[in-house]
Amino acid sequence: MSCWTYINGVIRVSPAGRTQEEKTYILNTILKHLPNVTGSEKDMEIYVNQEYGHSESSSCDEYGDNTDNLIDRYGNRSNNGWLRIQGHYLLTIHASLRDREFNETYREFINWLCRLSKRIDVEDVLVRICDYNKETIIQESNSSCFSKMYEWPSWCKESNGEPAWWEHLMWDRMKDDMYPLLLCYKYYNDKTTDEEVERRRKFYGRE
Image 1 (tube, helix red, strand yellow):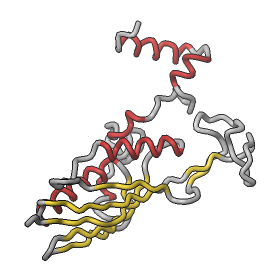
Image 2 (spheres, helix red, strand yellow; image 1 turned 120 degrees about the vertical axis):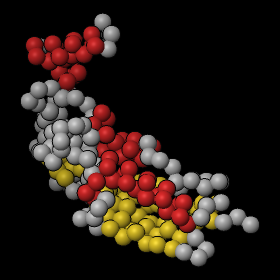
Image 3 (cartoon, helix red, strand yellow; image 1 turned 90 degrees about the vertical axis):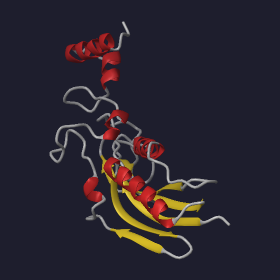
Image 4 (tube, helix red, strand yellow; image 1 turned 120 degrees about the horizontal axis):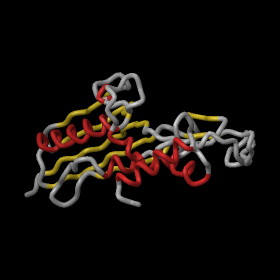
């Protein structure tokens, strides 16, 4: 007879990103590179849901421009509108893990959760882990040990100057501007940007 352990719950997270698409991409990439919580038939499953509405807004787009990609209060495109973004996502956790006992599943899940917490801002956790004779509920708020694990990006004062794991997923911008470095190189005559891009091309052997 097989032994089983079960995980069910929800985790609220806030990924980095300058657009909705970038936030979703960064979140999904982080999830793809976390350790597995395993069973002999199927591993733990994570379902990603973006919360309704928006939690952030900006009077310019992600490049710092006022274009008709912005949305006015009537839902129409307008260069006098807003870039609205939802910064919060809900991760629904579900697992029915065959040939696993409570202690090993708990250990794997905590390892997964700690790695997640380093790479993304974990705001709330409510997860139940159980087997046939034992259970625990992990319930943590925004001030929990998991939220304190978050590694801030290199440009924040809370950081020690090292890049966060996810920083490589964001495009580099030109100096003192929001505009992407490579688009500036492509479309504008900016000596500082040209020198930097050409230095990188030499570094990568692309000349």
